[in-house]
Image 1 (cartoon, one colour):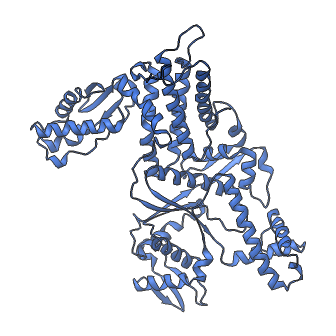
Image 2 (cartoon, rainbow, N blue to C red):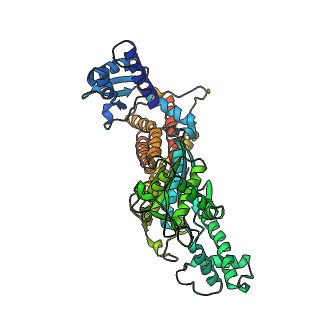
Image 3 (tube, rainbow, N blue to C red):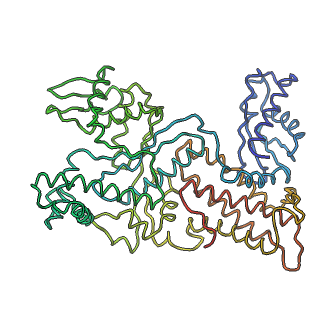
Length: 555
């Protein structure tokens, strides 16, 4: 029996009590589903609910009396071993072994689909993350936002949401001109100009640009700077794409800031916001009255010299997302962008959206990864491609995803590489590889999920060991964890769940055998345990995939 099935059984029991007059409750007050959760203490049963405390007053009875009536009705439900009332009206439910163990088959049959929910069904979101300037490689901070943003997109999709992952290319403005001048200076063998980009990667871009345009240094300086900027920009953006590919992060949309200016979208945004009464003019400049919506000051959109500000482009970009059909707009920004929250919410309000419903801004805190490779820096930054080369994508993604985004991080590279149970990513991946080893050993001993005559050998009533009950209980939690992670925008819940599942599995592995000893016959207990082993393998793989982390078969 799954939690959803138990939830429906509780709803049916409530409906029955209303139908026979036991409960003085309107029929439409009976919930379609009843929330059940795992008790903190295993001895209290498999599941618990406080529905009696929630409905008793409305039903004109006491919580305990309602809970006792529900317990009696639920006791007749197939698969329920016991229903006990605790405290003022909590209901603790214990499933019989067969009903609980049936989940192993449910997981195996569902395969990669197990854990997917409809928690966010019908929601449409644009999720923007990283959005680094194309003037240099992605650095350690972007690495964290990449791990979190991509995991969040995967988890929200698993919970039923329609999510478009988007990278906003900041390819307009003075920084692009500085980048072009820096590339040109390196091509000439000169130092970069003051305020330019000094990293070694600029020299690499210069080499690539000259390879494409051997006549670069023969061009007039201003023309050469434009060519260096455009070709250097394309080369740097392609380098960013390659790095993200190596990290397993893929965007649905790469949106160029330039297009907002070239298409007239910035001017159109100003006009649209003016029509809504939020734009005003002072001293030749065009302003947006964002203080009406919680911002600390009004914002300039068009300077007195006619040049648009970054804020104007931000407003146009927001309207673009709205026009492209994204009711939900989620921004994952770095710690130094905390001041953007009110500005973005003000833009949403000025655009006629609900800033509490149509926009979310998640702030990711700083991260530091220490270790002997930290000394390898270029331009005073540790880059993502260097981190991947040093630590590997799996260790990086898992380690960065297992903490809340708003938690400052200081991680040890050496610890992330350890092959020991103290290293969380190794611990979880090893659990998966162990399930695969069990499968291989089982095949060697002719243990299969069906009997030799091809009949179904799965008998969930045989899964009676206490470690099996704990393991099955943990497996049932996975869809709920996925839904919570999606709703709360917290990928770390998946990682922490996987660590708990791995712990339960390792304990079960040491207590229960899937393959018999050499002098033993293969029984249905062994075959049924193979189902449970494979269910764990599937959930570990599904969870790791939500984090963008591999599930190795051998380690």
